[in-house]
Amino acid sequence: MGAESSAKRLFFPHALLRGGWARDVVLSIDNGVITAIADNASSAGAEIISGVALPGMPNLHSHAFQRGMAGLTEIRGATEDTFWTWRQLMYRFLDALTPDDVEAIAALAYAEMLESGFTSVAEFHYLHHDENGRPYANLGEMAGRIAAAAGETGIGLTLLPSFYNFSSFGGEATLHGQRRFANDPARFLSLLEKSREAIKSLEDAAVGIAPHSLRAITPETLNEVLAAFPQGPVHIHVAEQVKEVSDCVAWSGQAPVAWLLDHMPVDRRWVLIHATHMTPQEAAGTAASGAVIGLCPLTEASLGDGIFEGPQFLQAGGSFGIGTDSNIEITAPGELKQLEYSQRLHYRIRNAVARREGESTGRALYEHALAGGAQAMGRAVGLLAVGQRADIVVLDAAHPDLAAVSGDRWLDAYTFVVGKSAISGVWVGGRQVVEAGRHLQRPSIVARYQRTMQRLVGL
Ligand code: NGQ
Ligand code: ZN
Image (tube, rainbow, N blue to C red; front, side):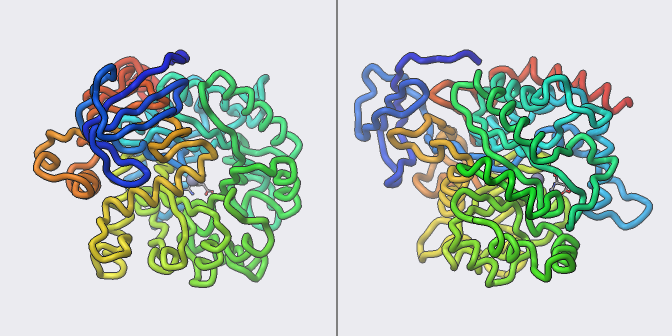
């Protein structure tokens, strides 16, 4: 989508602002950024958008290519299926993906993110090299394809090239299935430079780094990469599977989160993806560090990871955001619902994430995930406020489940009752990308995706 620099004013009858719900709100937008906000304002001279305006949700963790294998791993294998057998299928799926394939799949994933309430994505990108594990002539070829899909769909992008140097703790050589991911620190830093170039054509995007996991680095190589990129954000998978925890203990004597907190400069720049398995001390330490935990509730359920220890982390004042990770089902309200329901099932309680009497669970989930998500993106998103990107999700106030209620009940209905079909329109950087619940480029993106998948599934 081309740049649009003209100033505009959008009028919403209802909007969730920093201070809470407001009526008759006019947002002034210039170059994609909110420059003024008025409430109880006249709609004169503004474009009138009926519905309930929410800050768009950041998606802090995606592997876009995995959208193409959604629904293809739900068949029982010869041995008991686990995360690790799923990973073999995932490696097989990505084996033959071309840059065109990755762009086609990412475009569909990003269009669906926009249709389902996400307005920005942090792409944890590790499919770097060709089918033989050789770098493309342009080391940043695949990064460019991710940026192109973001440009085509209009989603805000934080591109996180992933640093993947080893296969397991202690510097084990990468496996055949990992040949397309692998870089030493020097080549990774060149790739980081190429990633910066890849996002240049986008209106507003950022680059961070993503050491894949403690399995994929050694302390020395991670330190080398961090020293070259002190600004962050830094995203890392951690403590998702029990085997990862026991392997880390065998290697270092410590669980992965404890090891990170003790050996790395974990602070507000850091995003710990999953952190499913933590002791109360690790949860308190993470909360105190200021790092965000990136929860991916639908993927964590799909892969049998375990249940996040919500109460201990929230009581310690921890921040979290949400991610769609494997992109099996893309939905912002669905991720929030799965998070809350996992806590209800585990602790046999209701309204687990809300903290005060009278607090709405839908609102508590939404605002937590906005704040944590925004911190994880390294971009000015997550609030309808002056200086922020004009990333806006509009709910259909005439929907049967929304029409008779107001305020926080809208968020409760969106999260627990209606889901993404409550969304009528979406704006990113002040430009409309979804109308009547459909991405404006949906037909061409779907046609290309179908051609791609027919070829891939026929392989
Ligand atoms: C990934 N996904 O990088 O796509 C990983 C699996 C791994 C999740 N952890 C591969 N959900 O962790 O080695
Ligand atoms: Zn992941």
